Image (cartoon, rainbow, N blue to C red; front, side, top):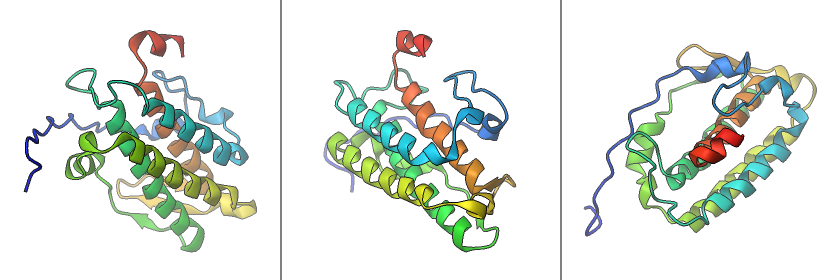
Length: 188
């Protein structure tokens, strides 16, 4: 039964791009360059990103969508929290199984089903930080040949622990960029 007064937001048009191209070239939107990321810095970058998300979630208007095609900062933060969990599972499997296969995770279905827009920003900040810390610790534990272990996504994309870490880091840092105003985006 819906919460009294609940009016669901219209779903965002799903992003169906294959973002794996960021592994080979600069993201033209946020400027992220995968080649510049040292895999030994993943844990620290995740922690810094979690602190930045906590600040985003303290802003006024955190529930406001800038337009009908873009999630609110709160919805993006919920997504990042859940991405931390999804990737903790995927990387854990890569480190313990031979070439695991991952079923698709539909981020747009998750946003609607879990009512991202209605969640409490301070709770999301805590959960996001905790989930990010867990994944950061997992990346910090990887060494040697562990970085080369592989896994496959349902669309056929193959990753190593190294490449999935960089791919994932782009996602969470890109979404921070998504929450900036137009003027702030141009400065990035």
